[in-house]
Image (cartoon, rainbow, N blue to C red):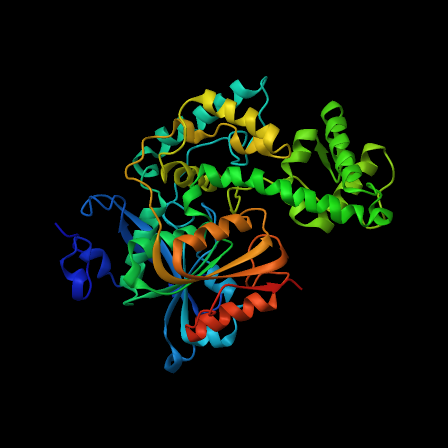
Length: 486
């Protein structure tokens, strides 16, 4: 039985769908808030909690838009997802309006949304205390492993008890289905899409599930679908080692500036001596107290050689109580989800992060001993971060998956943008998605450091130009290409 919601009659192939009532909705658009431009409009629509029971429980989806001011040039809508999982996207049209070229804005209505369970879209919570929050991996130690197992079990149990009726339905596949409801509600045959980080996986899944409804697809800083999701934490460890080696080489060449060693081997020794010293007696720097394990946890710093060199130099000075340089680096330990989440005061981000990370796939081991063995092994393979990446997670105790994960492999045209030195979705990950999307082209920014490339400071003009050109003309580069970071 179709859900009966007011609206115009469905058309074409969608007319016989049990989702007709959802697709026929007429959202009431209003100014999002008094402090935002009038052109920035928001609305709420309904989607089914469980797509297998379309006439069952409904949840709300918060959607936003900024319509083109050049209707005669309008091509359609450009939907955004900023990453996560667990990141709100409702304000993304407002943010992107500052950065997108006018030629792009004239062709598209800019559309954002909070994914199901996030922000204003029927948010979920697990009731986690501040001590229980935080999805950043934990280092493996034999003496603390049982505590890590207990934490993982508690997070999974709390999420099951607090949000069990919703948590299993917060998956990438269901978010992709929500996107297609948004497309229908906006009366569009196809959508164009820009996804960052986790948003690249969401875009790839959408292209797999709804290939005929994709117009122009930009995937920036890409997740490898074959690594969902444990493999995407473990790739952090394997990718950190060559980044660390590159840093030792770069820093050794500037020995007179940083005084960390005149050869890569000496720089490496300086770093690991600091780790050993800090594990005996923590080092205080910039208001933070660093143990050796916490120093290793900052593995993403080494993807930016200059920043890492400045930070390690200050750690070394602090370890000997020497005065800081005149312009000390500002650094603090960071808790991050898989890609680029937004951390609030409650546990909404964590709840959605674990729901998707654990619920998208059934490939997580359930035996704690497997995590112990993998962490011990990977600490030897990848000394900087291997034990962090392979240690136990709440996914070991997560409720059973309601449907299989998505196997991505199609010929959808897409533009993949990737920095060479990306700490969150390394180059190898972007290449993995590129191989699966056979109609895609990949632009690699040689020497590019950091996560997220296009329209993101520091700006990379060659990437911005390529993305803008594709969105305005629909023409992909004729072949995979590279450009040089500024």
